[in-house]
Image (cartoon, rainbow over the protein chains, first blue to last red):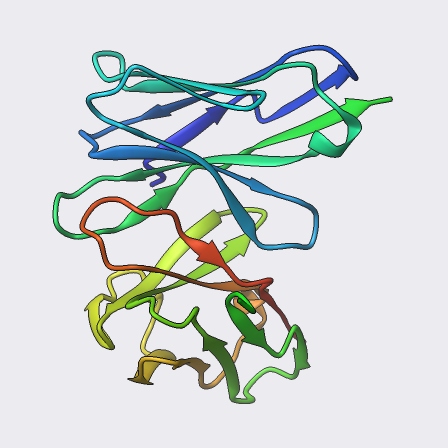
Length: 112
Length: 115
């Protein structure tokens, strides 16, 4: 079974609005990463947050991590049509093993 | 840097045929991962290597699948014999081998269709 579960599975908003995606996971983690995938392309790393961090920013991206609830959120502010993609969270779950396990993803559509 | 290079980008084959997918990781990266992506199962980790040595192959679905990394700049994923349920996009990714951290750099994937 997947370690990470994204919510919602699909999200459609208007350009300029903020988009929030959530990720829940099951076991203790060392870090959590968010990736983006455009249709027909490979995944691209967006941001990494460590288990001892609670919030991180990168440009229009804001990531939060709540280890007590085993959840994370990705906020994209002032969305653009070019943000249309699938977004995945990924967790490193076993210390020293370096396995990166992905969730099912959220498909985000930004309407012009 | 050219990034992670995968070939072929698309492969259509018939059931029972052997399929070989290839990957060239980014120079200097010593960890390499093979993932499979389908609509039903999402992204599944098949196997990963560290310094050319397979570390965890628990995700390899069956004996029909095998992966090798003969040197730091090349890896193959082989399916023999192939079946229609193997149809998927197969991704190779690499990164530096820092323990528990580090972004993965993905190739563009090999889309496999088994008829």
